[in-house]
Length: 286
Ligand code: SF4
Ligand code: SF4
Image (cartoon, rainbow, N blue to C red; front, side):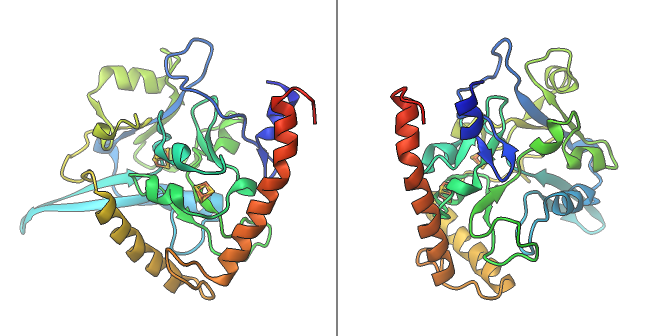
């Protein structure tokens, strides 16, 4: 990777790499993926709590969450669980729709956020068919944390780079999560995908999710939502979010004064980067 590309991908002290094409099955490339064996999930929620704590996720928003579904009637009732997170899609709709390339696909398969480029427009939030993204509030207890920008699961890239697995994987008491390189046939994820009948969420959309499920009950998997249905759902979620965050005003389309300031500030930052980027593209250095 060139020095330019390294700097291009840096945000909040993390090296996020470069915008890249699909690496699935490409020799010499890594393709990180997650396999969740739902037969082993007890619904304890440890993964969700670990994720909240690892990433200091604010009240009312989630990088990871647990969906539950009850089936049958008493006394013959069964509860099923579905841990949900970003699918790190091979063809991510969120990336395609972001106007500033704040969200991008890393060469190792992660779909990541560059907070310094995000203008908080929430296009990606609406575009993601899996509801995997959220807007961060304007006030954080820890002032060093990003505000007014969109965030999501990043497969704990900071841990993976140090040879660890994502925090949900190491915390799961049932051992339901397996994480690894799908391009390596000897990895546990590859073996699981090969050996089991794995399913992904909403495969018909063509996003090619890289979070796979074993034992997925189709009843608990979301059906494809129309844009109209989705925006109504988004509005409701956003209103709940507002209730949980004092000082956050406006609605989904208007935005409040805080968010407008944030958007303008981020957008000016984005404009400032254009000459340097143009220079790089034209091979003039900079
Ligand atoms: S699940 Fe949503 S946020 Fe994650 S990569 Fe796919 S489209 Fe993007
Ligand atoms: S909210 Fe940020 S990441 Fe999402 S589309 Fe807008 S600029 Fe891109």
